[in-house]
Image 1 (cartoon, helix red, strand yellow):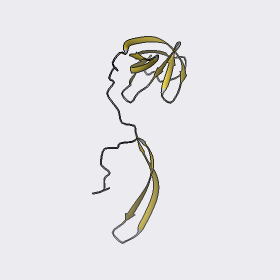
Image 2 (spheres, helix red, strand yellow; image 1 turned 180 degrees about the horizontal axis):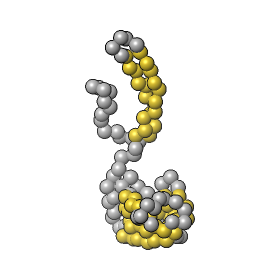
Image 3 (cartoon, helix red, strand yellow; image 1 turned 90 degrees about the horizontal axis):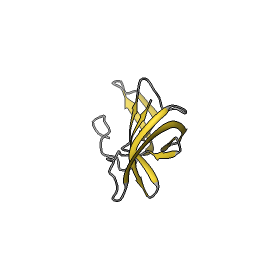
Image 4 (cartoon, helix red, strand yellow; image 1 turned 45 degrees about the vertical axis):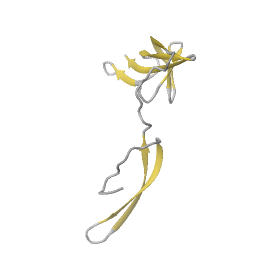
Length: 116
């Protein structure tokens, strides 16, 4: 922490405690405990060797922290997954969704999800 800014490249995402201390011109001091949340690093969506390109669409049936079940397929989200929303849509159950990505060792990973 220097020059009133936080800088650097995080190596691990997560939530970290942070205390802010401030002193004004007349010497009054204030403290505030906060939580700094660092997002996981976004990695480019690179198709692993041997993985097949796949895509599909259907109704969103389940939403988890790192996956969306579209129709019968569980589609895993990655740091690089782009999510697009059409015409005011939001990520919610029973919405139609389409996805593009790859399948490797039976796991489908999305590079893009479109919610309609």
